[in-house]
Image 1 (spheres, rainbow, N blue to C red):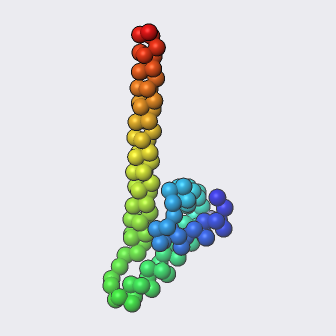
Image 2: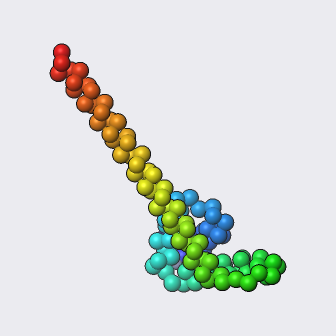
Image 3: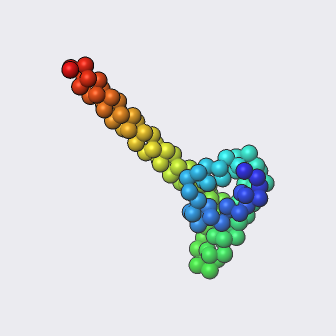
Length: 108
Ligand SMILES: [Zn+2]
């Protein structure tokens, strides 16, 4: 992913609208690119900061962004584990079918 792609995805990330693949690429670039990480931080501060100022809440936005990133990463991981479980179950089901077929054919 290039920096320009990252920048276009920032609003989608902030609105929780990235799919799993997009979020993965997003974080992968963020880890290697300091300037994009900084850009994300700035856009988050602008977006959330404006909302909070209207509400008059006190806030620690830097920490909140880190939490948001962690939450999204966990969601990706969770879905990956779920996918793995489905994959294993499918493999077991296929193995069972093959086993049954072997039994049927060898018993004749
Ligand atoms: Zn970048």
